[in-house]
Image (cartoon, rainbow over all chains, first blue to last red; front, side, top):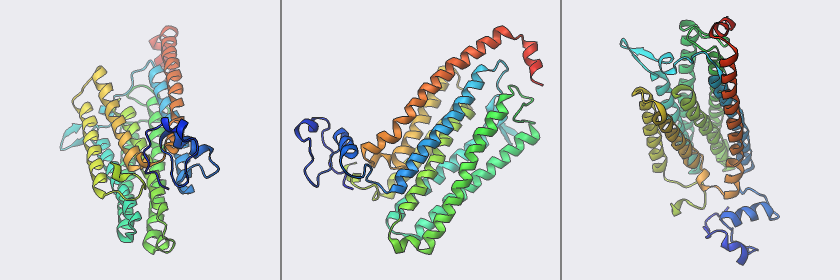
Length: 240
Length: 115
C-alpha cells in the first residue's frame, strides 16, 4: 500500500527490528519485512503478481531461444547470411537495409506508448480514453503482425529460406529466424486478442461497476513485455 | 521523482510521452548503427548500449517497476541473472564446436553435408 518512506536503508535494521504500526519499511529492511512478516508478501493485486511471474517464465523461454540461436551461429562453419541485406526492402528502386524491421520496431514502441497511456487513463477511471487507447494499441499490434506476415512471405517465396536450409548461407538461419520471430509473433497475436477483449469490457463498463481497473495494468504488463522481447530480438537477430 | 512514490497509479501522461520519445530516439540510433555500417567493438557496444537503455526504460517506467517494492523487484529481476551462466556456457560450447568442426571437417565435407 504505502511505499512512501524512503528509509536510509540497512542502518534501520539494527535500531528498529520491528516496524511501528502503520510505517512500512523501505529498502532492504522492507524486503525482510515483506517476506518475513505474517502477511501477504507482495502488496499488489494477485493478478499482477501472477502476470509478473508468468513474464519471468517467458523471459526464460525467449532467452533459451536466443541462446540457442547464439550457439548455432557461433558454431557453424558456413557464413551466416547478412541480415542487413536479407531484410532490405526496395523503396523506389534503392534497397534500404532493414527498413521494414525498423518500421516494425517503431510501430511496436508506439503501441507500448499508447498502452502505457491506456493504463494511466484506466486508473483515472476514464472509460472512453482507456478503451480507445487499448484499441489503438491492438491496431498497432495487428499492423506489426501483418508486416511480419509480409516479411515471412518475402523470405519464403522470394529468398527461398526454409527451416532446414537456404541459398544464402548457414542452414541454421532459417530455423532460428522462424522459431524466434514466430514465437514472438504468436505472443503479439495473443496480446492483440487479449487487449481487444479487455478493451471491450472496459467500454461496456464492467470495471466501472467494480471500480477496479487493475486488469488494464495487467494486460499492459504483458504488452510491454512483448515490446521488450522485440528490443532483444532486434538487437541480436537483426543488428548483430 | 519523490512525487511519484506511493502508488503506481497517478503519474502525469507527460512522463510516458517522454519515454516514448526516448525509445524512438534510441531505436533510431540503433538502426543508424547498421545503416552507417559501423563494425567491430564500436558496433557491438553501441547495439548493446541502446538495447539495455531501451529495455531499462520499458521495464522501469512503462511496466512501473521503478515504483514497485524492492521485494517484488528482486523476485522478478534477480532470477534472470542465472541465464547469464547459460549464455556463458553455451558461448564456450559454441566456440569449442566451431573449432572441432574446423579441424575435423574439410570445407567440401561441410558443404556436402548441407543438401
